[in-house]
Image 1 (tube, helix red, strand yellow):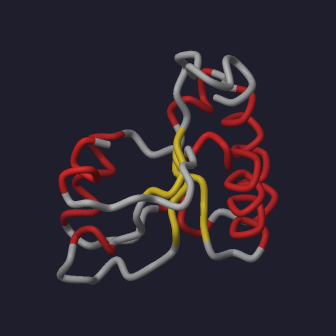
Image 2 (image 1 turned 30 degrees about the vertical axis):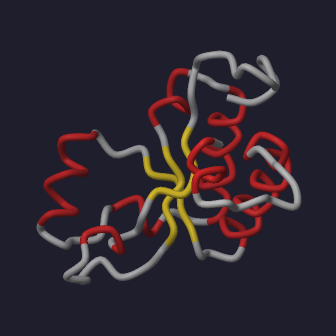
Length: 120
């Protein structure tokens, strides 16, 4: 906030990402249902190697039902769900590593300061 004051920027309103958690969940479900995203349960070391080599991860081809089941585990915060993330299907061959199926949703086991244990 001090940075904004220094730049003499006066915001019209303040918001927090947590104000939109429900909407974010809805968008994830929509992207998964449309096949534009997938749930990645790949071992982190293998995931790193595959992404560096620009190879699609095997879970990229999960069917919609499998993605829905895994996403449900993520929302419930199960052991498997906490190891997963949701990735947007983009370009695994991109020279820009950030565009190789970036993570758009992940879980955290810790309680959130505002929403407590409602979301994982």
